Image (cartoon, rainbow, N blue to C red; front, side, top):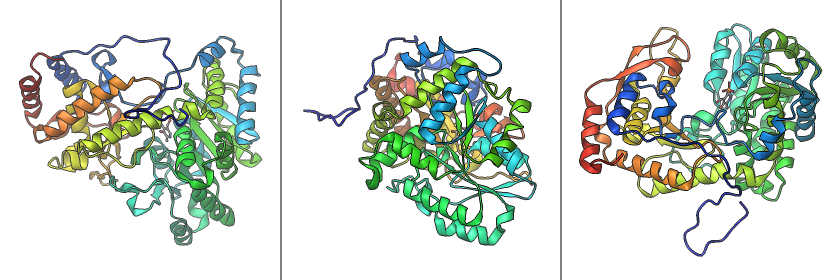
Length: 481
Ligand SMILES: Cc1ncc(COP(=O)(O)O)c(C=O)c1O
């Protein structure tokens, strides 16, 4: 969207139109409670037919463009030497200037390969903030994760525009404390997922890269949420306000040794990949691709998806494409702020994040407030969010709970998928739930897997709070869905 002035109230205005639609269902509240119960109060286990507004994630569910869909029809579907792979490789070279590209089936597959190559038992991986699957792979390889962020990165009310920044002095201190040899690599995550889709600045990345170079440490950048970070650098970092998006992308890459990404996010398709210009890193990673992913010219991806990623990358360099997500999110966050609903500010990328620590401040962390809020919102509005709090953490080695720094219910806005009226419906139901928040109670585990428990763990309410919530809904909304 170019800067468009409105005569009346401004709204985020899409620079695309919708030409394929999918019908949605909104089932009655009694059926929503049954769906939540059958899913063990875990929004990952819901059937999509029971969900009206699916805000679980943006992963693999962003709307694709007409250009992407048509590119998929001309994919060179060969096992080895596919021209489609060469097309993506040259797009990577064009935008990121990296010599080598290795395909992988998705983001966590890249993390698996990175952990195998770089992490030895006892090592430390330093990051601006962890992501669930990144941490799991580092832990599985016998390492630990050390997060370095500014204190207000976790403050939902702070107006810091770059909460994803890593404090350079703390990186220096960590290198002095652990010694270079114990540090597997330094990782910067663009659009930092678990703290509310918050960006880092290019200025900060440059400082961090400088320090890494001084100590011979590889700097790895997770570019899964690159599109949002590009948008925020242009909008919030004065030095780049007139820069072209592709020039910002190039500078981000120039200050990074290894890039990896989930193409379920970056490029609006399904897949992933690693890029580097360092031959030694390339060779180490390359040897693992045929073992764990597939041959070097598809890496576990459908070749059609690779075509779609190549076009998706091109579209990521278009400001009018990448601004839609953050501007819709800013609208939702702004409206919820006006209604006093606690959300993460400033509005980030990826989604609108409800701050469960304040939303349901009577639910203790031991009863998973963000998970409970997820169940409650599904009951109140058939809106599926994702818990990003204590449930999404691994337990400590002694089995005790590892309480998360933040308890967020993420309401993801897959790009170009929802209309403004659907967002307004979500705002309405979230607001109703906030006014009735005292009715929301906690959750307890029925079945708890050892790792990444948030994916398939099953929980139950600690009391009959869900029935009370339904009764209040009926009192306020009558027969309305
Ligand atoms: C920042 C970040 N890194 C890595 C991943 C993992 O990617 P994938 O889901 O493709 O395995 C994700 C997925 O959500 C992510 O958000």
